[in-house]
Image (cartoon, rainbow, N blue to C red; front, side, top):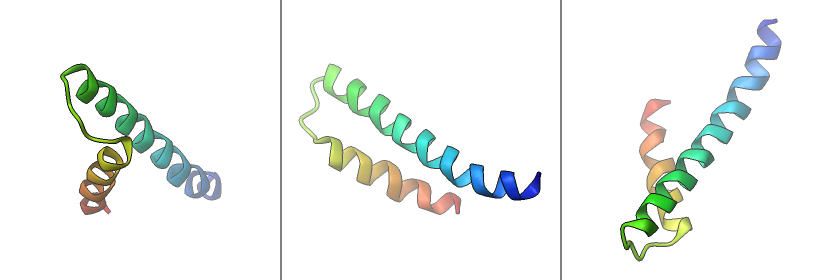
Amino acid sequence: MIVMIAIMMPIAGTIALFLDVTLLYFIQKMLGGKGTYEGTARIVLYSSATAL
């Protein structure tokens, strides 16, 4: 059980981060933002590194 959790948590965390990036990117575009998906991903991923 612990091994399965140790394997699944990084995978689930990665999927959750990219879902967050996608959601924020679409909100940004609806509000008229001019940034790219890559730029949004960099901001979210770099800021989430402090949670490690």
